[in-house]
Image 1 (spheres, rainbow, N blue to C red):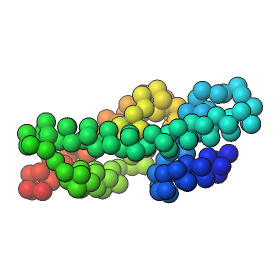
Image 2 (cartoon, rainbow, N blue to C red; image 1 turned 90 degrees about the vertical axis):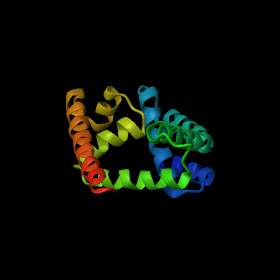
Image 3 (cartoon, rainbow, N blue to C red; image 1 turned 180 degrees about the vertical axis):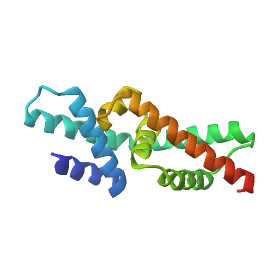
Image 4 (cartoon, helix red, strand yellow; image 1 turned 120 degrees about the horizontal axis):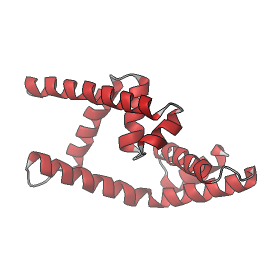
Length: 155
């Protein structure tokens, strides 16, 4: 099923990594909505969801960039930021996330980048909500420490 969804999504977005992300999201959404359906109905639903997500991907990316620019403007008090600055920030965040444990990374990415709730994150990770909260708290604490140290050095 994933291969067929990935094939369609890949033709729409023309970016392998983005296609993989969208395919994963489509399959997760399909299984959440269609737990009692048979395989052909699941496939059709996953393809439909994947296609819809792929078509919406440029709009969603634009909204994320706008949101990042607004947040950065509010925090920095500057007149605005560029896409390049947002990209550099994202690289710094990704590098910082790589220093965390796999579970902490997964919890943070699902919660904050995929916009899943605590309950949804717990379901995807197949752990309790309490464990998700612990991974989030520890991961955020480590990120906070790292950024405080880098800011004190004059990043």
